[in-house]
Image (cartoon, rainbow, N blue to C red; front, side, top):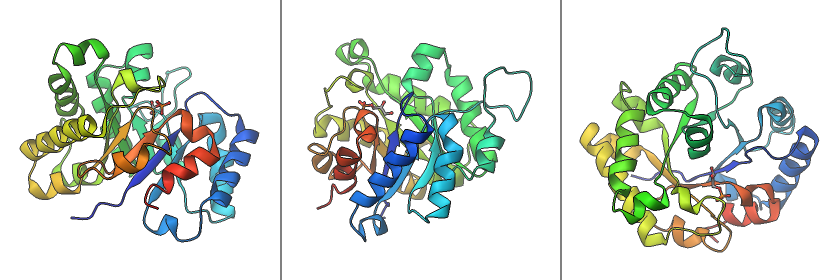
Length: 256
Ligand code: 13P
């Protein structure tokens, strides 16, 4: 089973819509022809940039997928400040991150809300990037797998095998996010393999072999090749380094 690697840039709350256009143009310029034939790249700007980035991608026919960082699970209604998955789909958004640890920890998203988002995103034919990951305390207490696999079970409740095969899971140890600390490639591989095994238990071999699993947490140009060479790591969810087109283009070229 060959899984096309997916490298995703999660800009978090950075870059206004002017800066977004410059960043995406520069990134595209820095990636040699042919690289994007074998690697998929998604860009996840803040909501206020999405329309601008969509227009740029479509008018210049750039080989980037448009992504969002978050959405609500309802189609519409009295949810001040929230964004409907229907609106994202209308902008040709392809990937939506859900259950990022910052959303869970800072904004109180529960496993049940994350599951509702997974289902809502797929209802609009977009692909969820379902995030999971443990805190340092949980890791030190030997609870990494129980935490992460519990998030996977909850996040995938009610999702069909066919849908699971097409979605993306991102393993992001919370202690490695924005800290400059990366899980060793071996540690990241161990958890990603456990996630794939859990998907195998929940579904079947074909589904587990198809689902793409990203690693996230201080991914840089320097550590991307080793992380990406692991058998169960099919991509990277990149925060800080995705704001710098030079560094992000190095990650995208992890293969050479
Ligand atoms: P950093 O790459 O800045 O550690 O962030 C990882 C992340 O949270 C991506 O979603």
